[in-house]
Image 1 (cartoon, rainbow, N blue to C red):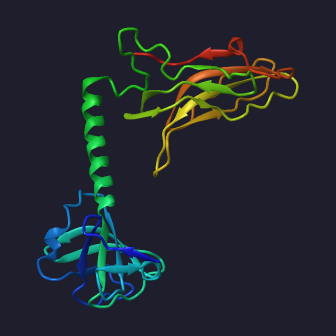
Image 2 (cartoon, one colour; image 1 turned 135 degrees about the vertical axis):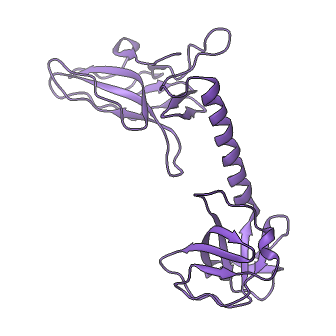
Image 3 (spheres, rainbow, N blue to C red; image 1 turned 30 degrees about the vertical axis):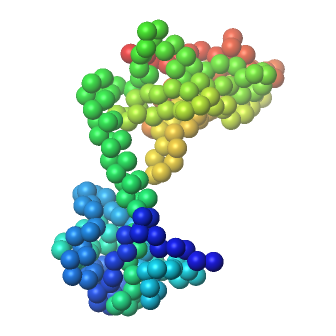
Length: 251
């Protein structure tokens, strides 16, 4: 099976000179560096050096044997990049392949960051909270309630919040992980929305408290915002709305 190097999907350049396995700079053919989009400071673009004679057809086998370059800077036709731990020597004439989808993803991410920054200025994004909006103040935004049917889980409604200056959220109603009842006394757990990092999605998380005759509410995790607390006792078999206390901060 072959992978078509469709001009619509790929930017394909030519490596001008050999690159050793430990080198962190290399060159492409004259004027080709101008075709690479500007890379914002602190970011990188991923490309693959593919040992193929033609840009028309690239097989999966040659793609699997290619070497990834994380390009951080382009000056004229000279590229600066980071290498993987298994980097190989790259020959002159190999192809440097960028997926346009990667460019689009970077552009969309930058656009999202710009929108987020604008919203932060328009609203009080410096304080962790769940915004009120719409004519009714969106009362169900990230609301925590009993599951249906009732179980040792809770249901979190979709919504958005500010956490550490970032917009986080759920796009659909989400069921929490199973909450295990305490052994002998009682316990308070916190249901939080945890900001995703390193490419991970935002998610519902249960912070488990300490079992006690007078249980305390545990602190939220770093990058989290409290949505509700749940009180359970040794005899608890299902969680009901009566066990749930709303902890959402609304502004």
